[in-house]
Length: 251
Image (tube, rainbow, N blue to C red; front, side, top):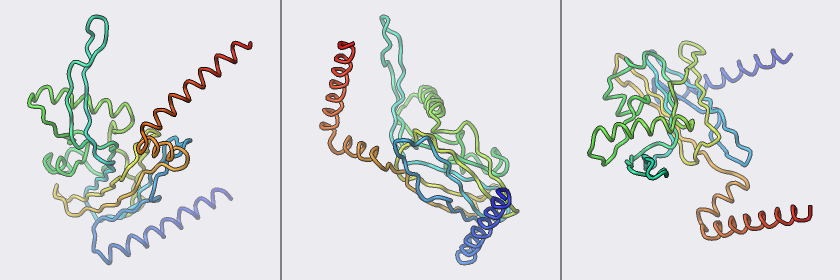
């Protein structure tokens, strides 16, 4: 019974999404269309990450899908040991670095299009070239590689492309895993369709990653009333220390 129920739900969702996508294609004459199974990611105190499922239809060609969070400036620092202490001795600031990025591809990743086009569209880790005012090319490359490694270790950049599942010849599905430390903000999902290396169509969907519940209130307080938040944290730490001291003293 459970297996039959799962099969029924899958068939129902397939025809529902197919109807939506085919309707959009017939109206807009798009060659690639995507939609999200959920339109918002909500972060609460028990958030352990989430799965973003994307469905879509396409005509023949090579397909790439990217998910990108808001861009921030990020500083990569180099630490050196001086007189027995680790201190920051050098740094490079990079501009327009996405707080989260992942991608999926159908086709040959190296042959889907030219390096120039992939770089302009921001498809693939190898094509991500964050801008910087650093004049030393070698230094910039070393710090750029360090930035990639750091973000990958945090789960905010992928090690390789995700898998796009072909449900039928023109209907597909892809899953992206958002880690527990995914930052909030407006996220962009884009689908790119290529034929013979040329971009023939693209489609975009936006969705928010937001904090809800008590964690949202704490974050709002920290942003809008930083002095009060800092004072509260210091007071909480003092009270916890005093309480622990009195407890062990009685014992």
